[in-house]
Length: 237
Image (cartoon, rainbow, N blue to C red; front, side, top):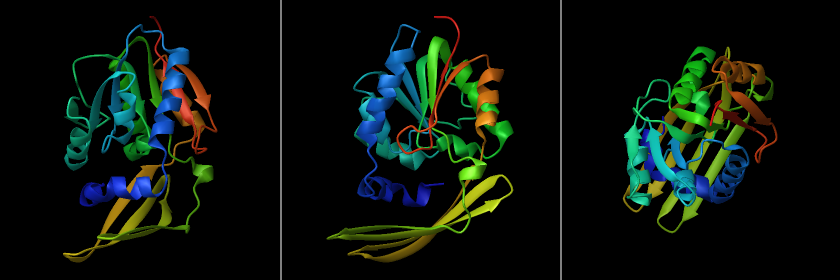
């Protein structure tokens, strides 16, 4: 996924103005309003380079998990005191439970199919304490995805120039885009691409996945960037 561009990830998204601190604080407020498990352990699934993780650790005993080892290297550099795990959200096994499990920045879309999304939710639930919460920021739904949109991001620093462009596409219920990177440094200019595929899941599909696990669901459809937020609580606690 982001392996070729892992070393550019923070520069690009911070340059775009993504407010990781504000998002993490908003997630924290939602957690405090609904958490019933009595503890403060948190697993940040698909944590990437650890930008959300670095702020969540101010409130919780945090661990991170991601499929991409290169992204985790960056996360470990930011948060050397935290444990990080390489694993797939669909079937990771950590042999412990957490008070909170987060999956932010629409990473749940990388499960691609409704079946695998349901497997991931069920796996989160198995790793959740009674009264605990999972907090999931969804990807776009089928009605919100528009084919043919062009997007571009540019970074202009003294020794680093980046141009990243992509067009949106769709194959059935799968959204996709190919990032085209042009990266210049004093050592030369490099061009490479990355293809990303994310499932377009409906609100009903998400709700059914939570309800199949017996979770109580709270849906914030306009959370921050209008992709929404799901907060699901496990019974007990």
